[in-house]
Structure formats: C-alpha cells, structure tokens
Length: 241
Image (cartoon, rainbow, N blue to C red; front, side, top):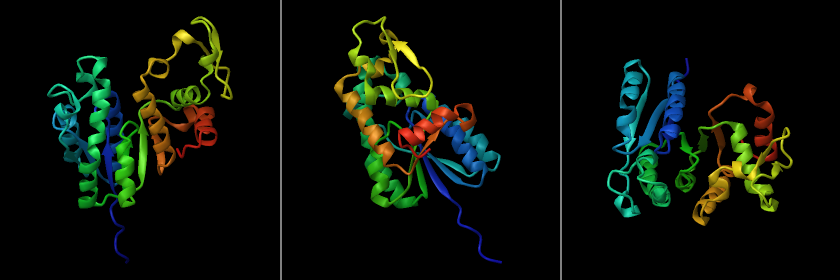
C-alpha cells in the first residue's frame, strides 16, 4: 500500500466582527470534519467569543486550533481593548480600525513561514493577507459572509454608479446589466456605497482588486438558492467562486 496522503492544513482569518467570525468558524468546522487541519487566526480579546466552540470541536475529534496575534489598538488610534468592530465607541473609529487591520501582514508572514499551510481563507476586509500569501506562494481564498445577490448589487453600483445621474432621493434607479429588474430609490442606497469617505472607497477598490487576483472566493451560501446571481458573479464579474 502507498503512503497516506498528506493532511491539508488551512488557515482561517476572519474579520474581528461577530457577523464575519461566526460563519467563518462554521465553515472551518466543516473543513475539519472532512479531515483538514484548521487553524483560526484571531486576537486576544476576540478568542474568548468562540473558545468554547473550538474546545467542543476539538473534544469531538476535529483537528482545529487557534493562533493569536496582538491587535495594534493604540498604535492605530483606537482606545485600548477595541479589538472588534462591535466594541468601537462610534463610527468615527472605523478608519482607525481599518488601519489596524493592515498591521497583520508581518505576523501572518511569520506564521505562514513557520507552518507552511496549504491555503489561507481570509475575510474580504483583510487585504494585507494578499501580499503575505503571494510572498510564500500560498493560495488565498477570499471569504464573504453575505449572499451572492448582495455582493453583485454592491459591485454593480461601484462599477456603473447608476445613482450618479439621480437628482432626487425618491427617483427610481434601475441596476444596469443585472439579472432581474432590480430597482430602488437613492434614499435606499447602502451608506457604505454613497456616503463613504475616500479612504473607505479606496479600501473597497483594493478589496475588489485583491479578490480578482485570489485563488477563489468562498461565499456563505449555496448555488441552488440564487443561481442567476452566482452565474453573474462568476461570469460577468469574473470571480472564481
């Protein structure tokens, strides 16, 4: 008999926000249930939110663990202990939080060099992981915790900006070149699309760029629920889902 196949090792690096961390850990458990060694990357205060879940998974026989990076709160202009989106005192601290996320590249590089994982699954907001994984030739999967439909809408708005010609909040806007007749009013636009400062808009642009150059995209959904938008995301927007 031949030797056993090498066990795959995958890093999972979620954004420090409950709505991003919970679904990524669920997916990590699915990977681990199929024999993959999984390592969750997080920060000291965030690990307490899911430690019990990981402990139960390990007790059930899953090969899943945690690596902890320090969070650069003070250096990024955040109050001490603000390691999670949910702990920010106000939206005024969004930009410092985003700045702090860019400080994880070097620690991730050190961890990749030490463990040589087969893949890194990184949250969409953690764009610094693109350079770290590229440096070591490790495939990077971008993780989205939302539906394909919502991702398609945001990308369509960013690309075509149909609201730019709208003169009234009550005027009906139709998404161009989009599956189905999707229409809305300017007042219904997501705030992060219309009112974002330039730094956030630049971040979203960079996110799209690094997503296109990634090995692929993981979405917290299944194809049969929204096939038209899964196809649009893959074929029209060029994402490898």
